[in-house]
Image 1 (cartoon, rainbow, N blue to C red):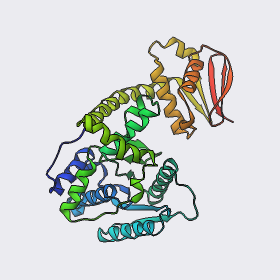
Image 2 (cartoon, rainbow, N blue to C red):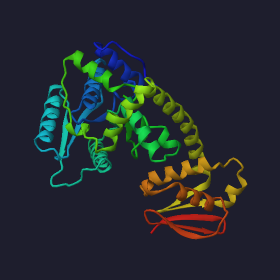
Image 3 (cartoon, rainbow, N blue to C red):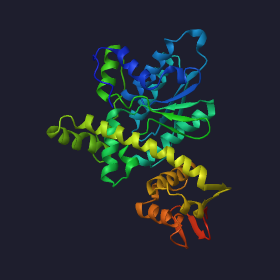
Image 4 (cartoon, one colour):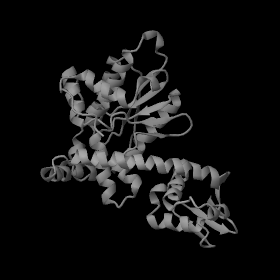
Length: 341
């Protein structure tokens, strides 16, 4: 849910909105790597976190902030200008910066670029011993993501939108502190503070699906339903509340029913058949968590794949087959084993 409007000239209100969602008590004494593209959202996040941290007593500051910028080098001089801008920004804030330039890559699709950025910030966080990776996703990004997932035929997880936080492995957490803040609120705060940012021309290109949703579809929707974006945000947050309950049950289900042995996962189907509390939605959520934790081909799994593995685990069949990503599923006796080939 959005935290409500604030005066466009109030930078401190913008910082307060970040603090309400991510109190400095959680991150002020540890390391934070901030992904900074040079755009308004990431610039606002970096400046906001630095402002919040500066308001803490100097003797109590034991953590650190590091800016991380990945230069995809796909827009020539504009990409280099983005990098130079972020370097100057980090220097002005007295923040260390790590930069990586991708040379000779022909990757331009949205998903691959996003995966590259995520891998980059995660690696940098691990290198400097940070506890958090912070990214500047906004309420607008969340609305666009929900619509994108909806058109792809998503399940409940997709309708919950962008997760405000998730684990990236041992002792590293991804956080998105601005999911309740709109892009215009960020820009208004930066304007009041007299701060500039970079505009990526590719964000206007309707060939990218998210840009088409942003610049074509949403204006069409809001012309008929003026409050549609706020309504989608509320629905997404309600869905996430439900999802949190399912995730909690899924964690308990994994603890009770799943045994991990090396690369393989094994489910006790006899115990499952005796467990009247087991629900298909909980089993799917548990399996998706297992897939994610083990870096299996989660994105290649369809609804029919999940239904197949749930049916096998429920003990309704005795068979052997393969799932996307080279996973071997074998039902034998009272156990189902999933093993990478």
